[in-house]
Length: 143
Length: 164
Image 1 (tube, one colour):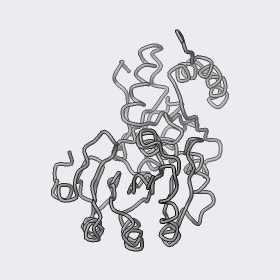
Image 2 (tube, each protein chain N blue to C red; image 1 turned 135 degrees about the vertical axis):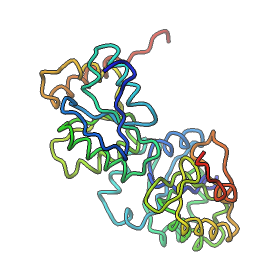
Image 3 (cartoon, each protein chain N blue to C red; image 1 turned 180 degrees about the vertical axis):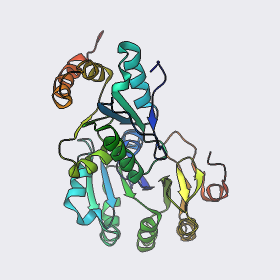
Image 4 (tube, chains in turn yellow, brown; image 1 turned 90 degrees about the vertical axis):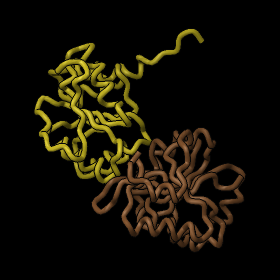
């Protein structure tokens, strides 16, 4: 997959998400496709993620699209951009009935890079270390 | 300060509400009016965890909301009334004794039977009539997803066929 060639799922998609996907990234606007393109540019491992935008979708459509993506890929990890965002709310509602699926919200690029590089580690374990490193990656300079 | 916004948004509490409107308006409370959510502890917990610490959220049925509206309008800090559909707002306005002067259509997304009017507004004929009924009660109805966007008056909204 080349830089900028990021799969974005919509409620009308009929494509089956590939089995190489280890996590779903969902968010506002082009957030998911944008951050995955950055992972692809830096590591060449953007195919680890499946992108979804909430643009134009109601909560039911967001939830349905995410559920289908989980079923198609077998992914057990969902990353979202904002704790109060509609994708986050949809995932939190959905995972009540899906034990073993983990939601991580408020993500940044460091987190996805770390997760993408842990290809041989169980994704649930990879999430834990990636979150710790992502938190530590944020810094203020020059204040 | 009176309640700053009476909003119809099928996503209820989400980024546009909490951040997009919440920060510029300095919102300190959300009055979420939904008969189903008001009777579900789990749904309430879901939405409660979606708001930042400086903001509180309380849940009301339409009946309770109408009964408490006057009291909430006297609170010193700004707040928002949030409903998930046009029918709920119509019932609330009709029971509010003229206390609601303006309604914001913030997000009514695609579903079967709805026609796109704006990028973020899709309506069935019954929902269009519902908005007309609200306006007929002397309420200013306009569509606006975020504060920086232009409010689209009801007449223009219902005449729009571009989905722009």
